[in-house]
Length: 636
Image (tube, rainbow, N blue to C red):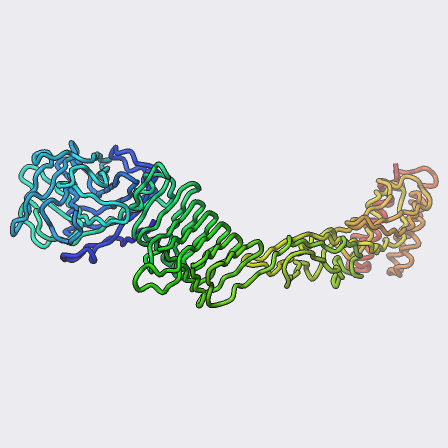
C-alpha cells in the first residue's frame, strides 16, 4: 500500500486536509493492543515521524494500518512518564476539514480508554461528551505504557461502528481526517500540545478549526471471500461467490488479485491506473458502460488466466498491456449507453493473446489505436466486428536447444604457459524463433588446464525470448620439456657432503619447476661418480643433465692441491713455503702419520690467512682454505 509521509513537520493553520498528509496500509494480521509497539506486528503500518507544534514535548511517531474490520493506530511520544498524560485523537467524520457536531474523539491515558464525540461547536471552543452519556456505546479499545524514555499508545477502532451518530464509519478507499492532541495535566500545571496547528484554543485546548491529516482506508489486495470483498467496498454474495463493486481504483504499485472461483462484477467502473496491476484467475464480468467499465490505463497491466466477460451493456478500454492466457469474451457493441462510441472493447494498448478471445455476434472490437498479438496457441473467434489494425499472428515457437562444439585439447603455445587463437568450433541450435543469436564467454587466452566455455542462444520469441545454454571444455596441456644445466665437473675429497658439489639451474614455459639429483648425502668412496640432475615441471615433463664428480683420498687431494696452488702463480717465496707444508703433509699421510699431517695442513691455513690481501688474493685464499678444510675433515 501507499505511504505518503514527511518527516518532522508542523503544519500551518488551515481548514483543509490538503495541508496535511495521508497514511494508508492494509494488514492481514491484527496487532495485540497491549501498549507495546512491536516491530513485527506493526511492520506493515504506514508511519510518519512528527514534532509537536509548540515543542513542549519531544515529538514521536504515528503508525496507521487497517484490516477488513478495524483501524489500528499507534503513537510513540518522546516523554518519560505517563503520569498526568493523555493522548487524544480527533476524527473529522464527514471529511470537511472543520470541527462539526458528531465528530468522533478517542482518548487514552495510563488508566483508561475513552470514547467521546463533539456535542456542540460554540464560536470559540467545542464541547465534548461521552458516547455512553448520549446513549451510545464505547467502541474500540486502547492501552498506554511507558518505558521511561517514550510513552506508547495503541488503539483498535472499528471501521464502522453501530453507533454511527457518535463514531466515524468508513470503508475501503474512504478518507478519514484526524488530529492528534497530547495533554500534560499535573496539580497546578496545565500544558497542551498538538501535532497540527489550532486556529483557536481555550485554556483546555478546545479548538474550532485545525489542519488535519488523512487516513485512507486500505483494501485487501486478494479478492477471495466476503471480508476481502467488503475491504474494496464491494457487496458479497456468498451463495454465488460474487463481489459487486462500483468505482474502484487500483493505483500505482498496487495489485488486485481475483482468486479462482470468485467472480468480480463491475457495475460502475474498475480503473487500473499507471503502475497498477489486476491479476485474474477467477472471473471478471463487466456490465458498466462507456468509460465507467473496465479501464486499463496507460502503463497499467491486466494478467488474465481466468475469464473476462464483457456483457451487452459493458465496455472494456485497454490502453495498457493485457496478457491473456485465459478467455476474453465480448458480447457488447457498446450501444446501450448514451454517448458511447459503440464498441464493447476499445484497444489503444497491447493485447498479447495465448488464450482465447471471443468476439461474438453483434459485438464490436475497436483496434484502431492498438495492437493485438495472437501468440502461439492463441485463438481469436470473431463473429462480430473487429476494426482498425490487423491482428498480428505470431507463430508457435518450438523449444529452443543448443549443442556446443566437441570438447577440445590443445598444446600450450611455444614458450608460454597458455594458448591463444584456439578454434573452438561452432555451436548448433534447433527450434526457437528466428533470429537466433549465439554467443559464448570464451577468454582470449586459455591457461593450462581445463576451461569451461558457456554457449548461449537467444531467439526472437514473443513476448518473451527463449534463452538456453550449454558448455564446452577446452583443455590446454603443457608438453614442453624444461631445460636444465648441471654444475661443472668437480674434484672433491672423500667424505664431502652431496650438497657441496653445486646446484643445477632450470627454466620452463610454466612456473613451478622442481630440480632434484641422485647425489648421495656424502661421497664416501674415492673414484669417479656421475650425478644426474632432473628438472620436473608442474605438468610432469622432465629433463636431465649430468655432472662428473671425482672423489679423492686425502693424500690425492693434497697432491691435487699442490697442482692447484702452482696454477695460481703465487709469490715465489710464499709458494715455496706453502709447497713445503703440503709436501710434508703428503709424506705424513703416506706414512700413516695423520696427526702430523693435520698440524702441517693447519699451519698451511694460518700462512694463507696471514698473506691474504698481500701476496694472496681473497678469492685464492678462499679456495685454498676450503680445499684444505675438506682434506682435514676427511682425515681420521
